[in-house]
Image 1 (cartoon, helix red, strand yellow):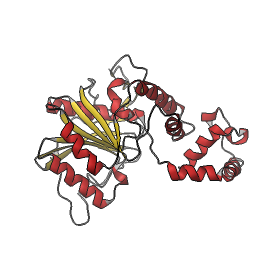
Image 2 (tube, rainbow, N blue to C red):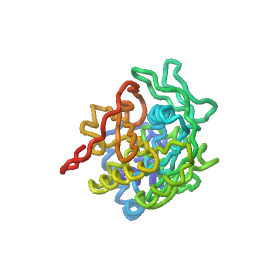
Image 3 (cartoon, rainbow, N blue to C red):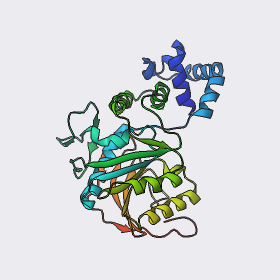
Image 4 (tube, one colour):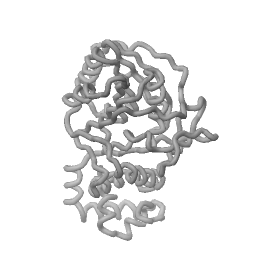
Length: 310
């Protein structure tokens, strides 16, 4: 939050000494002993503005390249269900990953999906090639306590500030995806997921596969809320099957989430109150590479014990 707030304000208040360290501001100076004092002085000078940002904003990075990690899971679910997807994302930020089917994908070695998009997501495929057919989408919506609007200059400014200064490629992808989304923004609903998800599930078109998506958000839930979320999914599955795609959480599925720089993408299928889960892929958290796991079987999603472990 502090670094993002400083970067946002640096764009508003030109400071050549500090900007020289920021590639996002056109700087190319490597870190040296003067960088820390320059950053400190800038933050002290703009303390009141920084405090206001810290009070009003949240970390809501919308990493577009993660769509390259979601696509294989979505494709497998659509194939398994034999239906188009009804997507509901939890904590979608600006909802850019809800628009995954508006992007083109390049997994290397001639593995490409989608076409004709200004957003081309490059993600190195390691191991088995991922599915290259974009599934159909019957409906899409996002639920967030503070959804960001791609048509709001202030929200766009904050999204850009959350990207690390030296990650020019991520910033360029974000800008391109925002331009695509602004033509037809995703439907985002502000509010409590426990109140709104049942409504969105009930509104999903008949004949579609209800797919809930959570990327790096469930780790912000308390253990009681995680248990409540699971119970809600199990209850919803008594009316229709529910799929859940999770990236970036250890406790919700099983232990051992992190493996060096790799994270895991999990697909869960919950039907009649009972759940199964499988590993969809290993990947880089920013979507720079993926190791698709097509042969991983579904295993039983066991009830939690008293410690909250699966």
